[in-house]
Length: 500
Picture 1 (spheres, rainbow, N blue to C red):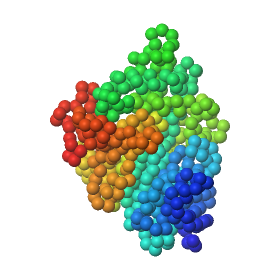
Picture 2 (picture 1 turned 90 degrees about the horizontal axis):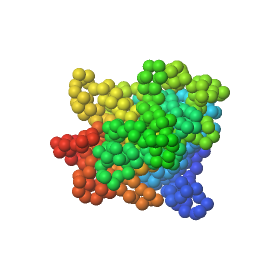
Picture 3 (picture 1 turned 180 degrees about the vertical axis):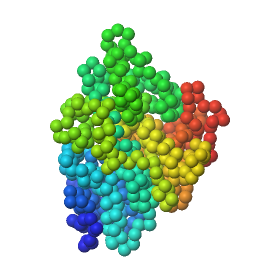
Picture 4 (picture 1 turned 120 degrees about the horizontal axis):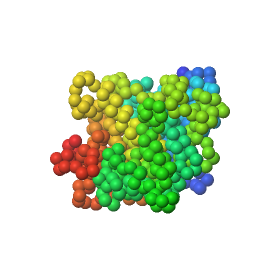
């Protein structure tokens, strides 16, 4: 395919055959329809090297384009996301975000390359989108009727960055567990690591993490939709449990926490703070997320996702030297303008009648979910015509283009003790194309490809509650109502799924 691109060039264009069922084919490629794969390299700056792939079905195109996200520091094309979009009939694109040879956990290759920071933070996704639409137009001789973006984690940040800085790129955006407050998120990850890597007596061993979870479930039973649930179904921020209740009466034991371990648990739940001013730097993780805490103590002793700090402090940066009182502002000032998608001003996105769905798992141990709630509330208070209106009125106006869904028991972009999958793309299509706003998302739990339960996830600030009758593993047995506090909801607080 010979097609000039404004900021790059096409490097390959291949028709891939359909139905790769042989054992030698990569799993991601098996059973796909025939498609045209176009590879391109984009160079919006002399130091940029952004790789993209576009997969376009040879037949059966649904007339739509889907941009897809990445994870961590990126560095490679996410073929699974391309395959999933292709199976739905989309022309679909993905980018390595210009960070190769970085990997998801290691971005050391970007030390000293500020233009690559900008590619990763805000530019690569837009460049991919412009090029992909041009290539799709050339291949099908017509533009896509609708364009959607779908990503989680770094992909969630990509989605919000598009809504904030390039609001006309997509008709609809799915932002899952967004790492949008990027600089502060890495501060929070470092905080959890530091709290766990102090003298060994402060470390909570992996075998004790279930003790924390069981204590949470026992203490916060009001936040469980069904007594048999092994996860919190309601807003865990209303679970006021104190790790002090697990303090060992004497010495150490397998079924309790030492005083040092109690202190570590409290600090992880609280999140990073400035020790001098006591100001919160970023939310902590929520009760019910403990199954992921073992990731706070990598075996090699290196700070997870620590490369970002090396971009500011140099390749010799030692995580032990980080000063939470003074260094945070340095990181924010150097990287925030390029990396953070935290502006609540979505007026242009809203005015174009575009739609945004943000979802986040309450049991996310990597990207604390309360930050998504905070971002949503800032948007509610910003994108309104009447700033003196009631919060309910502001919320209703925001819901015309942006809805937040907090998923019970989901860890980071999936997994976790509760619901581990969600379909947000189908509701986004209905909302964008037919004007049917999503009151709920359908989420489910599957183990070994077998669905164990389905439940509706209600648009924030409502929560999913059991009707007290029906199969607790069936979505039809639940309704939406205001979050419960420990005494439980009154009957007057309940709403049907069709009448929020």
